[in-house]
Image 1 (cartoon, rainbow, N blue to C red):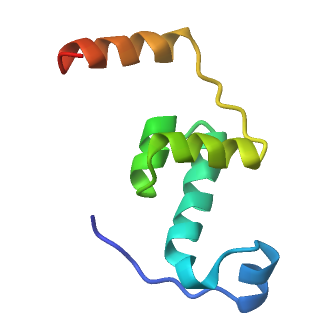
Image 2: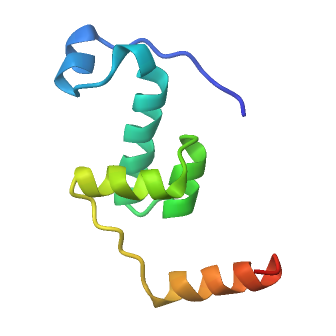
Image 3: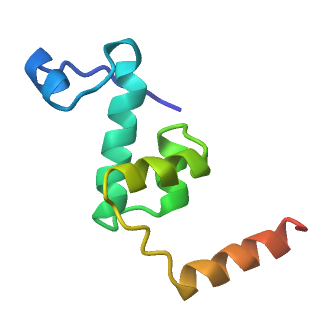
Length: 87
């Protein structure tokens, strides 16, 4: 995956309570969560883009009060995907 470097003000990093040791990963999770919350990407895509297992991303979303809005259409799509891959 192509990556970019970004400079962030230290005050912003502290205000967001991001881990400086894992700043890139933490920032990617926050951006992915924002995109998911705004319905710009799916839950699975959000987890994929920030390199986080979907279960961990679900927990991350819950800790930040972001509802999963996982509906019937999402369930049907997951069922089709599971059938397609033989599960």
